[in-house]
Image (cartoon, rainbow over all chains, first blue to last red; front, side, top):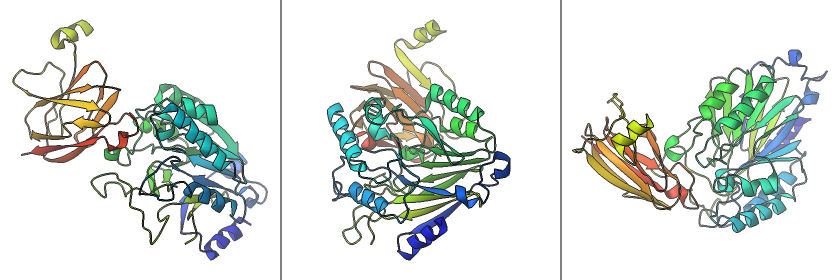
Length: 300
Length: 124
């Protein structure tokens, strides 16, 4: 069923890139995660990121329309995902607390049009760093939490409410306590905004105490991290832990260190929305892998 | 210990580090002869934002901020510091390698935060 859906995406010209992220040996028999015929427990979710609602500028002349196009694109998927996750920077930062709340409210109103309303949110630094997440929590609740879905344990980490880009001791202790409850072969997915590893600190693409979080996760054999922040796909391994960043829904950023400054890539009128998009993540339990399919905001 | 530090440094926070190939790090009061470069951080610029240093020559960067908490981070040189309103932050560095190195504010400080960058050029 799911494979047919992916094949449909390819046939429809929507699947730009498919990336298989091996999860290693899941030890499913031991954990009892797989149903009798295995594939019954496969599922998929959609990752959207960095919509920066409220941004205005030449890097995206359709800043007010791109998020709505993404919502429409998700609604038009051949099968509805089990859930949707937004990995931060829902809104573009503003120094005005009232304007911040107005942007958060407008964002919430737009994503209310998603047919699938099982949505997990987290903040980016643009949403939360200027007020330590206060306005964000008014609209979307806790900034770090866990949930479980079909045998996978999802952990949402907040590395932005501290303006110094730290998870902090309290959240680290909370993470350690949560991981203590998981068997070492548990299937764990982490969602966060900034990369937990030092992707390119010169552009602030890091989490100051991210290495400690990775150290806590390391004893667990099946961990995958999905994040945003860098407005482009990036795939990286720290030991056996895979880290996948998502495209943005406002403007793409250059590859790490590829130019002197971290400036948005210019909008190309000949190829509008180039570099923008969202991701379909298919969890294939029997194969012990995630299959990532990058999808455009608008079919080109 | 705090009293001793205060006696050495007065009301000034001293962070002493070494860079690159110069491996000796120590904390002490800056020598009077050492060059001091004052750097002001304000939304959303460092002034100056281009700093030229000489390889192997110690220098003290003396930071102040006129408004909110800022950060100074030069990852290629392995140094960072908080810049706290109402205080002077001193960062003693001995450049161990030549080149051009980016620095930036690493504490999210407002709508122009991401443009708050500068360059340290170390010449031989």
